[in-house]
Every structure is written in C-alpha cells, then in structure tokens.
Image 1 (cartoon, rainbow, N blue to C red):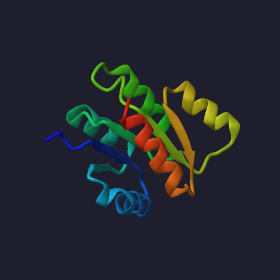
Image 2: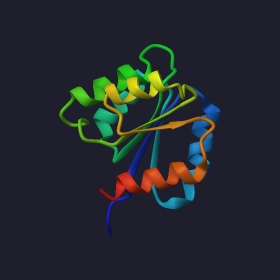
Image 3: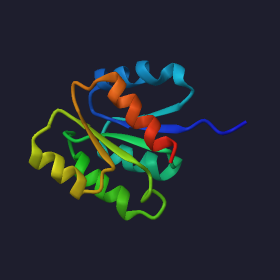
Image 4: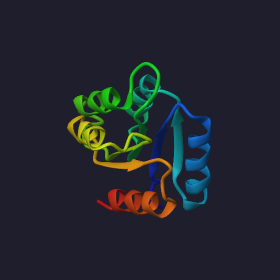
Length: 124
C-alpha cells in the first residue's frame, strides 16, 4: 500500500485550520497542523510533508519568512508550498513567489481551486 500523502497546514486561525481539515479529512491524506511559522518549520523538518499550505499573516515568523526558511533547508527545499492568505494584492503575491512559494491562493478560498492545486502538486 502506498503511503498516505502528508499535508502540513500552517495557520494561526483555528477556524481556517478546521475548514482545511473538514475539506481534506475524507480524501485519504494525513493532516498535520501548526499554529505559527516557527511550529510549521519545526514540523516540516521533522515530518517531511508532501505539501504545505502556509498562511502569510501570523504572529512571530510570518509566511514569507517561513517559506524562505523552508527553502533554505535541504530536506524541505523541494516540498510544494501553497500560500493561503487574505493578502491578494499583486505586491504580496509577488513577495510570496519571491520567498519561494509554489503557488498562491487568496482567502476566502474556493474549495475546488484549493483541491485542484493540491492534486496537481501531489501528482508531480
């Protein structure tokens, strides 16, 4: 049996984490959560997820800094990172890609858009 794909959800909002979990719960993924950038970085390094959904606006280490830190580590360098944020301004989207994210979704997100991106990156 193939291993379950691991998805790390990093967001300081319990509501957003719950929405992600409800959306992905019955799809056969192993879901891991972190409430801020530091915890997200630690979990990513220790668990090596197959994909990371990363919020931008978080206390302490924000999503841009977390993304850069993930890209700086050899073990997490190639993991697809999809930033999920309310900051949909072009300069923030550009900053996300500059920090190393693979893709970018704005909140409130469309479930189908999120699932399409998830499946696309997990099949690579």
